[in-house]
Image (cartoon, rainbow, N blue to C red; front, side, top):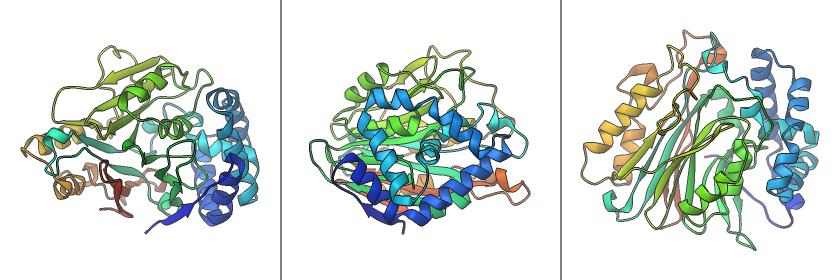
Length: 347
């Protein structure tokens, strides 16, 4: 299982504890992203310089988050610019890198199950996080207790403020990367910093309101749900925010935009990007059951019916190392019972 890193105290102290406790995982994150940036033609020094452009946007959102980033650097013995680059890694990567020969060929599949369709009567939120398998060694479960803000538990890449997780108010988040024509053209709030800010929300409505106030530098989708049974996909982009709520029992998302009003936003999908068939497969499996329980959602996340392009992804050994995408971890959140089920490998 991934290491649980408990942190508390001031923002800087939380970061310091994170960096010190997970120092080896932070080192792995830094090494992996330095390699990926280099593959994309960006030196590690240049990546740090690019990250600085987003610092002011983070400070305007919440100055404590900058303090926490600085604390992670102090605790891990690395430069603050390096930890900032980790947290802005989506914004630093070129918007076309998913289509680069040998680059990652797809990412995550996420699903929200509303309480009305849940076999246990409460909202469920889950996803497979598909990425480079070497980053599995960098994952931690970061846990912060309640204080003047909600406590939370997030499955994240060490050195980064948040990724998949839920808070003590019964609000949870998942992430799918998107790529738009305007990515990288302006500074903004990095998506992983946005995810951390969302862990202070009580409801999906709060999350939608927060997203609408911010400017983003790159595109992603945040699938979120709350204990009251609401769910929504927040498709964020430098061009704005589009919300998909739908009326069905489940809401699924992969790695292309499905919101109305986003025509012309999406970069052309690469031929080897499996996002469309994965979305259809997830929707079909979810629709095939009148009620979905925890084991049903786990079974959906284990689906390997499409080989290397399945919901549950195994790395294709015929591809270059930088393109061998696999399911790094899987997480399922029972929002009412404050429980997260984690598969720390290909589920």
